[in-house]
Amino acid sequence: MANDELSNTFSALADPTRRAILTRLAAGEATVNELAEPFDISLQAVSRHLKVLERAGLITRGRDAQWRPCRLEVAPLGTAAEWIERQAQVWQSRLDRLDQHLQSTQDRRRKAQQ
Image (cartoon, rainbow, N blue to C red; front, side, top):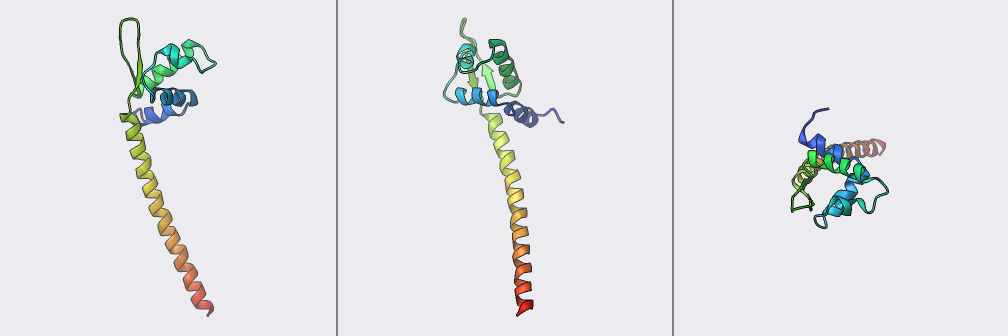
């Protein structure tokens, strides 16, 4: 598997805990402790999830004295959404052509039966 940005984004999004963290960050920046609150996992585990998200470019961590807020970075999500949309368009076009072919076949059979 290629180690490209899109692959990193999808890999990071594959985990439900990381998706939940991103959902929380969509409401605004938060500290690691704040992000860890709803989960029944260790602070270390949350930190590991944050590292994956950071490597994928989905979050950044700031520095404000002792406070290290995490914030959502939407650009990789936009890139992933664009890729998904392109794939959806390709498949929709293929399905439309298949539908047309099936409709044409059915029309020919009806005419042959008359």
